[in-house]
Image (tube, rainbow, N blue to C red):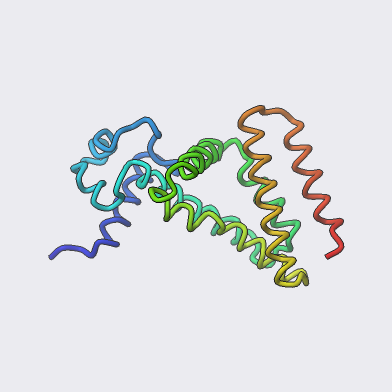
Length: 187
């Protein structure tokens, strides 16, 4: 009896994490090379993920989903500013640098090939939704909560990108300054 398509994809994602870790396979590996490492036929990967970018997007989406659970589990009652700090601390940690690089790699590809990265792009705002919920808990109006979360996640991602391009202590200091400015926001 064949397993449902979703189950096969989930098993492949687990195998990808087991073989390649939380950042997934290197972006320079072909589908055949990835399949070889997993000891499956490459057409199976193509069937479930469509393409190498689709596979990378699925792996990174799953990794982000897991990351968000870890961040949210730290304290699902965190306020907006502490949650911003938790997000920064998590993703600026050197242990997550490969995943952060993979994220920006896929974002760049998605700008040019949005159809190939629909699932990845659809999930990209998960952190913004967590921040929006925190802002609502802090008493922001729905409109203010959406706008504050969009500004915060955009700035934090920009600072993460800056840190990858030109790593130095100023990026961490700038992130802390930005986060502190959020605490001063009167909304």
